[in-house]
Length: 229
Image (cartoon, rainbow, N blue to C red; front, side, top):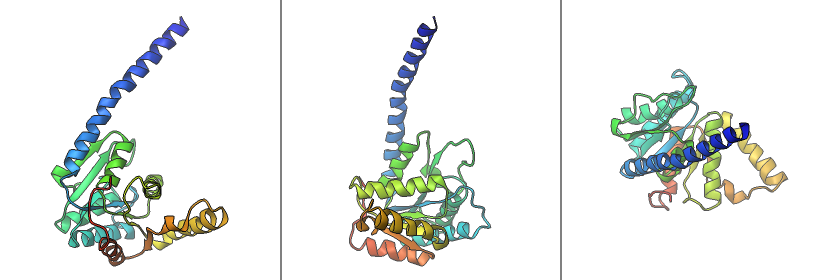
């Protein structure tokens, strides 16, 4: 009897997994249709826990405004903290402000600075991550947690393996990122030879909005703006 119940439950799980394909397809279709119309954008990542009085919240807001002033829109994960700061800076500067929202058990709620027609909701992290890399012409990565690190290293991996076109990855905050970059160079590269020196060419460590813009401008003098795959 127990084996029969287990078999029925297993069949139900397999059926639910199969039907989930259609929900996943729907998220991809909706994302592609909406984001293909937004024009060139730069994604800003960082902690959802960063408060408005934090210096990195204010810095993210300034970076976003500078990005808009130089002809790009801004994409964030749509939530509070650094994401809110990015959307706020873009909104106040009169530029495109996109939010790719996802429901989480804590922290996440959409912020009020996203353009009403450019707020997308996702159930699947992997679909949302595809949208970030497909429709971003650069990643600006502020201090954050595991989610921020996940986005950073996935982008590096996709570029390293030629799965997407190159775009600049800009880490903002030497005091936060400096130790990680030193570890990558000293341990991954020099000690264990697990990466190549060229893998680090598109990673930039900066502290000011002006440096962010300089890197984007220099890079796109050589590369045309386009979706990334």
